Image (cartoon, rainbow, N blue to C red; front, side, top):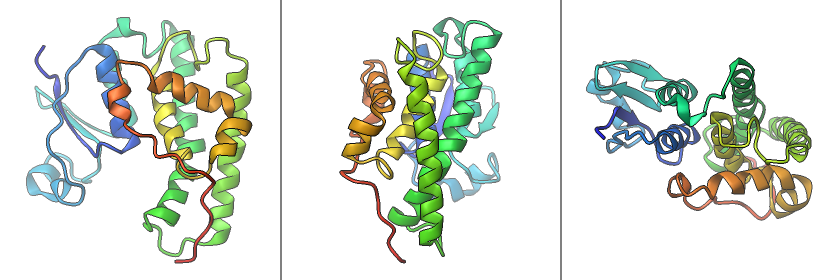
Length: 225
């Protein structure tokens, strides 16, 4: 099968991973051009197509272009409806969208800000109060998710098979395991959340995309810059 288009993105970026998960499960091939953040996405040939220079960015063989990881993943999912990644009816699709939005706004946003402030040092002026706020927000959301998954016999979010929501959540939870969830949190506080992560990431169709999870032993502490 010929590739359906090109995906520009960093291989460790959760949004890029989500698109790759979707394409693998749907049996679609996407070209992954060599990419160097801050270089490739600043080239004129890139910014002419994608003026914001954001990644991931997608262009199909007919010149159709998309930015925003979830939008790209949702579009690719829609190309093979039988894969069931968007649900099997309107209610399941709404649930998929709900959990995708929840994962991105209620978990990924706070944990990625902690990662950017403590590890990557991308947030000038990041302070202890902000760190505390983001950590508490992530913990509240993870507790809600833990309680929900504890009620799911399949261990999955919407149906008994993988959906886009499960794929995006797993990519997001990986970042949580690198910031606010140490060994104790993963094993004792949020065991169902990380059982979900293991279930998704051990799927043979997408296992190769994840690589090592990079989990930490204990939650990241604030460090003054």
